[in-house]
Amino acid sequence: MQEKLKDILSHLSQDIDQETLLLYLQDQLTPEKQHELEKQLVDNPFASDAMEGLRQIRDKKQIAYMVEMLNRDLKKKTEKRKKQRDKLRLPDQSQLYITILILLLLVVICFLIIYKMKS
Image 1 (cartoon, rainbow, N blue to C red):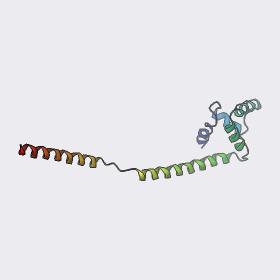
Image 2: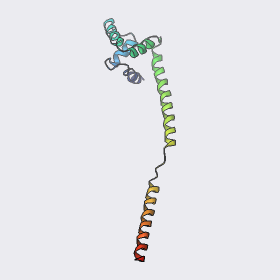
Image 3: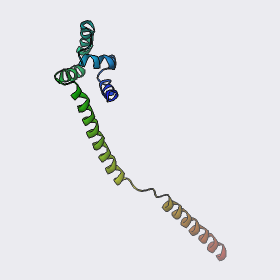
Image 4: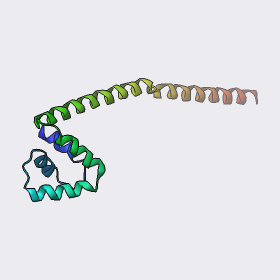
């Protein structure tokens, strides 16, 4: 569960270590490191807003649960769209192409035979 949370948090900022983010959320960082992390977050408004929202959650165990639920919903939606795309995709028609090619070859051979017989 912690690994999934680390993966999601890694997209907030490329400069900030995932482990540092988790420690920050759990209030286990030293004040100096917290201040340094907050300085880095000021440069990225999206990450800053995300961390502000995560800070407002009182039960830190809920974060892991929410991440799991969001991942599950996202997976369901993407699977549903993938199934819809697969339904729209045309089936493999290689046999049809081979059959048409053979028929065309037979027609050409028959034409050549008939043409030679007339000459």
